[in-house]
Image (cartoon, rainbow, N blue to C red):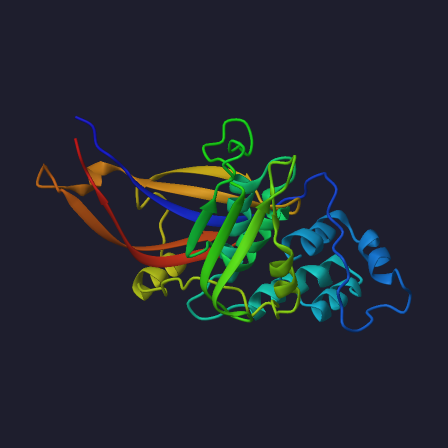
Length: 303
């Protein structure tokens, strides 16, 4: 007799310094950030590797021009760390975890659209990071040539045109279609020129981000228990951590928490399904919490 386990996946952001060349973001400010023509580029070059990667990779699509300018004028790593904390704090909206969703999208884009370059750098990756998954996708095949796999071992094939449909994108409008055209001789897509122009004329900073609503913390009693009276090994569970690189500055850690199935027995009998009230908090070594959520988690036990 064998029993299944309950798996609870928690995205946790780990900021780790990697060696590698960061992309230098273009300066698209509506006001001069530096008096010198190349002042912004020079300031980026002078940044330490980790904050430079955060600026031109992690936040490249969502940082406002004035925020980027302010970041480039900071003098110390401590100031930059405080800026990054405030950057995400300003984007905190009740019911939304913008930071976690942003990095989840980057990792998904890397896994789905990556090849010779990181997936988030591709046209489809950029749109996915900005707006999330489309409501529907239409594929238009070119019957004059066979579809090609994006990379060896891929389970999908590239068609001549992909059309992503969004019911609504704040800052653009209702019923938005974005068209991706297969680049000749390459296994990648380019956003159609008219759609690229549409994005350039739209306000995409950062309140326009299309974010899903996350459940609120429901079990305040469990939150208080974890905060004040948690006892090590009081709850028996196992866990596995998988790491997925997002950018040169950030790694997403996926944590699977597994509750032994013996916990779902009652009077020696296996209960078909169990629903647990659940509060999870992941803390840094310093003790500060970096991720938490509360909801009901259910799983089934089987033979």
